[in-house]
Length: 64
Image 1 (cartoon, rainbow, N blue to C red):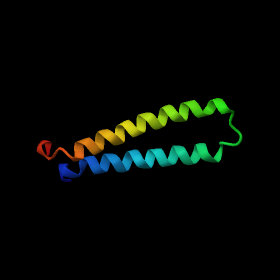
Image 2 (cartoon, rainbow, N blue to C red):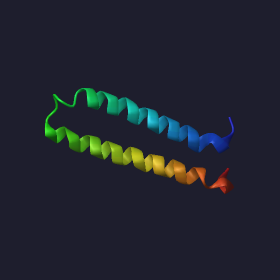
Image 3 (tube, rainbow, N blue to C red):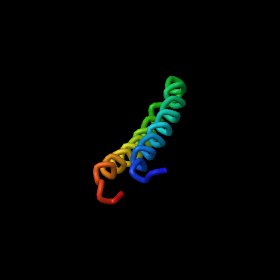
Image 4 (cartoon, rainbow, N blue to C red):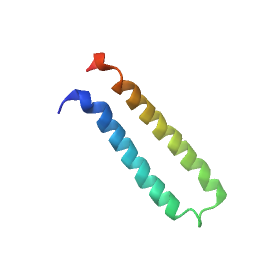
């Protein structure tokens, strides 16, 4: 495949992983204690950092 689409593939994978974990967490939210919110916030921070990196890379056409 063409390397110019690498950033978009990375964003797609990150979004899919986020959706899977958020769906599972959302289904169990009512049974979880309040302290279970902190790990999901950390997870989202890591995932959004990966998404921001992919968006940054997609704007740098010189590396492709």
